[in-house]
Image (cartoon, rainbow, N blue to C red; front, side):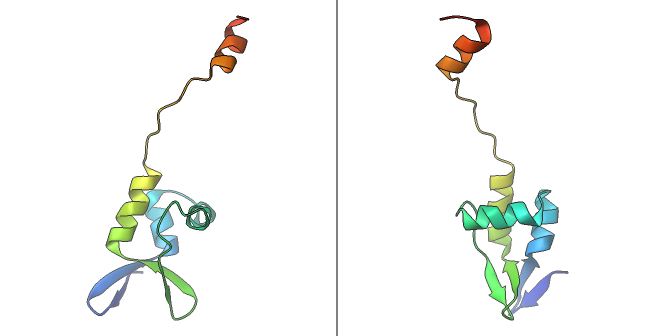
Length: 81
């Protein structure tokens, strides 16, 4: 249920979590860790996001990070000393 305030549409935290296919708990953790925007408080209890904030969260949720090889792990996997 999107909320319109002063002509701007906001989405609830649960809606954003559903859109980016993560749990609400994951989104809360990302907020606490400073990885995604904190959003805004609406009526003292609902966390809501602007479309730009939703886009930032979606970008973070869909990021692709390269895997950095660990020399010691590779040695262990292949029995090299």
